[in-house]
Amino acid sequence: MAERITRAVATHAWLVLEDDGQVVGYAYGGPMKPRPAYRWSCEVSVYVSPSHHGRGAGRALYEALFERLIARGYRTAVAGVTLPNAASEALHKSLGFEPIGVYRNIGWKHDAWHDVAWSQRPLSELPDPPEEPR
Image (cartoon, rainbow, N blue to C red; front, top):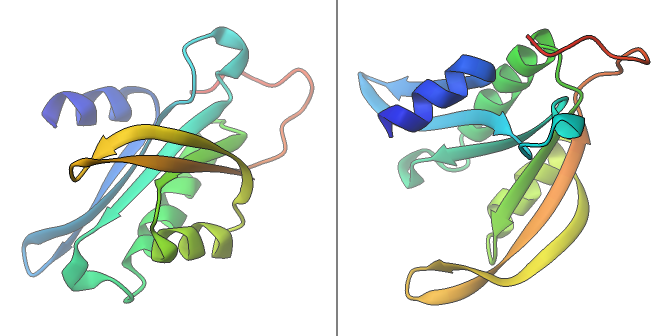
């Protein structure tokens, strides 16, 4: 986990949410793809402890993450949701993510194959040509 955090912070962002000194959630961004043409896009993810579901933690983490990604010069965020996960799908939709496709039976989790639904949302409008992300 420490390596993942170090990589994310170097180019994108990693945020942690605490409650009474305990980590209850995190959100981070990273490269969407390694090829240079995609450097203005990023993949984002959020995790919230079940004890804090439905309390706005995911929204708060994502909103703070998006601010940091915009400040660094990113244009588009993409997110994958392992299905089924109605709460995560609803969160992403409420934050402006639009569906772009589903990878079928691609993720092995909890002793079963799962589909992953992908969505994207704009972060910012950039000039043509855009400046390099910071």
